[in-house]
Structure formats: C-alpha cells, structure tokens
Length: 432
Image (tube, rainbow, N blue to C red):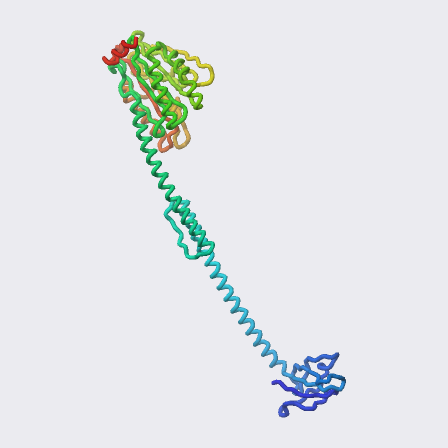
C-alpha cells in the first residue's frame, strides 16, 4: 500500500507512518535529481516503487521533504481499472449515441419513405392514396401538402372523366350523324347498275365520304373523297365538301368541271384551315356504256374486268390531279373507260393501301390487286367490298388504325341503261 515518510535534505529518514514490515528505500535520488518531485525507484523490499516528493515550507536548501510512495503494481491496477471504467463509459455513450442516431434517422426516413410511396402511387394512377400525418414538423407539413395535392388531382381527374364522357357521347352522336350522311342506296335501280360502299373511320369521326348522284339524261355519278387531317375538323369539312359537290353536280356535265367548280368554291376555306380535299368523280353513261373519271388527289380507281376464261384481270386506271384547295393552279383531266357487263370499278381511299400491320408493313397496291384478281368472279359488289375490308382488317391485326378506310364497288349488268327512281326522276326533270 501507500507509505508516507519524512526525510531531511540528505535523504535520511526522519519519520514514517508505518514501522512494521516496511523498510525505507536505499536510494531516493530519482526524486531529487534536477529538482524532480516524482520518480521511480527501488523500495526497501526490492519492489519497484513510484514516489512523489513535496518540500516542507519554507522551501530552501535545508527544507525537509514529505514523500509518499506506492508499489508500481498497485498503481497500475488502479490505472487499468480507471481505463476500463473510462472505456466502458465511452462505449456506453457511443451505444446510446448510435441508438439515438438510429432513432432520429428512422424518425426522418419513415415520413420520407411514406412520401416516396405516395408519389409512386400517384404515378401509377392511384389518386385515392393518402399519407398519414404523424408529426407537425416540416415533414408533417409536407405530408399535409401532399394529401391536399392528391385530393385536388382526384377532383380534377373526376372532372376530366366527366368531360371526356360528354365528349365521347358527342363524338358517338357525330359518328352516327356522319354515317347517316353517307348514302345507303343509290337513287337508281340497282338491277341496272349495282353499287355498294362502306366507310370505316379510324377515329370516332373521319374525313372520308362517298356520294351517289342521279344526273340528267339517265347518267349517274359516284364520288369518293378524303379530307386531309382527322377528327371533328375533317368531319365538318367532309360534310361541307359532300353537300357542295352534290349541289354542283346537277348543273355540270363533266366530272372535271365538277371538280374545278368545287375547287373554286372551297379553296378559300380549305387554304384558311391549311387543309385540302382529295376527291374522285365517276360519271356512268348508260347510252355509251362507259364511265368518265376525273381525279383530284385520290388513289387511282381499280378496274376488274371479267376475263373470257371466267377469271378477273385487274389494272389501275391512270387518272390523277391535284387535291381540291391546293394553292397551285388546278386543272383536271378526264379519262373515259368502256364498261362491259360484269366489269367492276373499285374506288377507294388511301386508308386501304396504306394500312399498317404490327410489323410496320403496308397493305400496298400489289397486295390489293392480287386480292381482287384472286376473288371469284361471281361475287356480288357487296361480297367483294366486304371481302376486301375483312382482308385489310385481318392484315392490320391489333395495330392502331392509320387512316380512314372507304371503298366503293360498281358493276354494270347486261343492260346498263339506268332507270331512275320516280322521285329522283322528277327532281332531275325539274333541274333541267
């Protein structure tokens, strides 16, 4: 243990607090060398000691000194014990600090994760998702703002859905009206000139149309058109173009003149809307057993002639011209083709030859011509049109419709003279 004793300047023992079992150290020089007050030395029992010296006042060369010594082994045990205690306290504080850090991190991360999950839910369209607000700090305010935003988005979506439903209802009605504008039957008896047409808009409403017109002197006219663009604007111009053509046709004899008059009438409006109209007019002459065709930007008509060996020979009639409404000067030529009983003239829009499938292939002219040539020659015009449309739809599969599809098939019978329906005949006579 510790021992305190008093020595004189010559390091002689004067008095100590212990007499039994203790011997004074033989050499205390380490405590006195160069004014040192602490040092290590060998004790009276030969054990290593650590001692501390303190001079007795007044401090001078003859002052006595009080020395306290302790075995080095005992001192190090206490040092190690203190170090272990300090290390334990440091470890405990570190663990508590780490636990507090994890708690704070979790307290911050949970609201952030909730916000992230909420954003993902909104991105997936789940506008009913809400975040539970558990704090009143900045993250809690952010969660509240998020919920308010989600509520407003939900209300906006509901309003948009209601507006879309009204638009769908309006477009469905417009589709029905537009389809009602297309003629179901021609204004002549079909046992003399059979005809059948169909139009399939790519959207709710489209810009394609066709028209049947009874002309003076027993002639009949068939028109097919395609307004540039899609949707409601194209549908409105389609109705305007169709009605204008029908009103002009009764006063003009040649299809080229009809197109020229239509171009002059519609050009200002079409150019103002940056649109144009592709139209083809075919006039059937009963006496001459022929058809005269003028084209303003449509696909050339396909003529399928019945071959002598009960086959079908197909070829496109070369006739073309610029669309109605073009800013360039318009001049339309005519082509007259003789028709024999059983011949079929097919008028079509570019939606058929430009139909795309899922592999981005187009139906094309060659496939159309080969299809018509391979059909049985005894098909009616209704069966022929339906077969072509069915083949095009099977070709496109699930691909998004690229354009409106419109097709008309006409075929004269053994005697081509056109007998007009009584009410049409009366109207034609009144317009002469």
